[in-house]
View 1 (cartoon, rainbow, N blue to C red):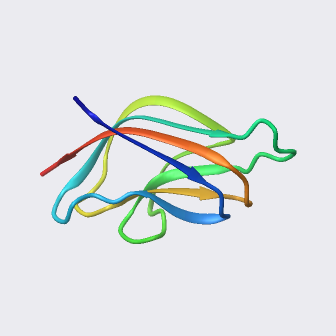
View 2 (tube, one colour; view 1 turned 45 degrees about the horizontal axis):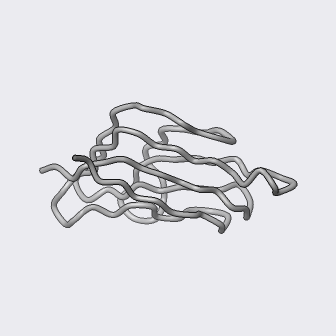
Length: 99
C-alpha cells in the first residue's frame, strides 16, 4: 500500500509538498495538481524535486497536472510545487519512501 499526501498550495513561489525521512528518497507514482475552477486566474504550476526549497529537477510545468509516472528523487530531496501567482491548487501525491 502506497502513502497518499494531500496539500492545498496557495502562495506564489515554492512550497514544499513532501519531505522524506532523513536518508530516504521519495518514489512518486502519481501526482495531481488542479487549480480552483472558481478562481478568475489559474496559476502556472511547476512540480519537481529539490534539496531545500527550490526546484532543481523540474518534472512538470502546466496549469493542471494529473499524471501517473514513476519519479524518484535523490536522497533527502523534497517534492516542491511552485505557483506563478497566488491561487488555490490542490495537490495529491501517491508515493513511497525508499533507501
